[in-house]
Image (cartoon, rainbow, N blue to C red; front, side, top):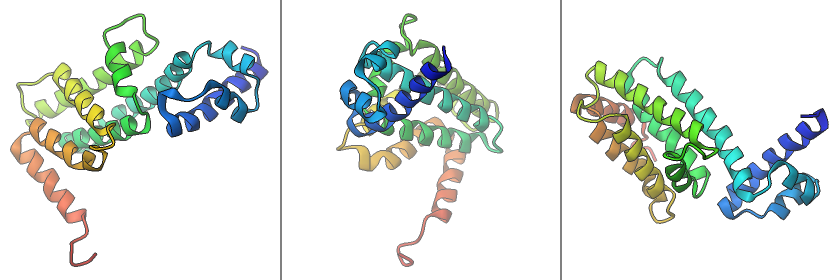
Length: 201
């Protein structure tokens, strides 16, 4: 790709990220082109459809999410890593309206542009779970597929306006179900210690 074409590509993605954050998957291609200061034809040369543009955006964010999982694999406590991973996932899902349904469809479709990135997120989840299980901090009767399913269900709920205010609570409920009781109690106690008391508010 020529330097000028690469510059336009990166600029379009940067602007599209803001527009999609505002309008979700229904973001207008014309609006993105206008804000990026390029012609619609230029945008369409790089991204022939809205879906292609959205997939490119999601791939970059999924790759960043997977990188975050790699960092969490070296965290001191595997149960804390699971909680952090779920929080990262919810932030991702809430920042990209409609992305969870899109990922669910892509996860089993090798022809999808999202397939490889989805597979890496799935694999990262499985590794974090396996580490917690080896350390006795997560229940042994679930696997990576189960964890990814729970993440998808939670992400879908958090994407709904009526459930969004409960996202943090629901995350802790699901994580408590994944971790052993001693691990989840430790996480809850840590959370309580860092949460301001009602008297101090």
